[in-house]
Image 1: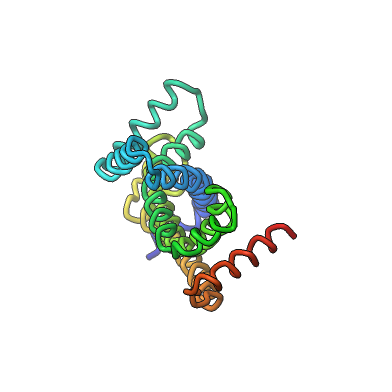
Image 2: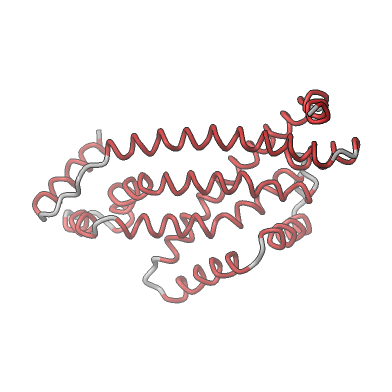
Length: 240
């Protein structure tokens, strides 16, 4: 145990800096993946079959390749076109890899919304994109939050692979400490402790969010008249 404590004590600030970089990398990649995933989800729900095939091909390609292969391919592809710092190149590569899974989360959330609400919005004269933005997407995003939180946890753990791209996040710090001290077991155990703390805190936060969402979710209205009244209230709220 003294060896574990020695590695932890002597390299605490290095591991803490690596953990901070891991969080920053995960947040940036998730934001980019959310934007990409929403775009791909709309492509997948498009009425144009070529657009749907492109989205399905992208999702199938990402699901079919190992993450480390995707990261290497995207990283060297990005840096061959644009010179980016390793942090941003790794963030973009992670975002592309996670975007396919986020797209499926959004697609399922959008399709779970009662079609009557969209039809009621259209019957009130709202164009397609306005009905999606003001009526469907707010509810779909609310339903997607728990799944997005789980994806964030997965992305936080997957970010350890960018250490092989030269980013000194938490796992990269562990590799450096192991090379300097020749204490591989102790270095990776300390890194695992930091990962466990971060994920435990994030899991507790997600549970609180899920409880709030469950408490605020009301039973969907079924009658067409009530649907239109619901949409009118939403339009009125959006205008104020």
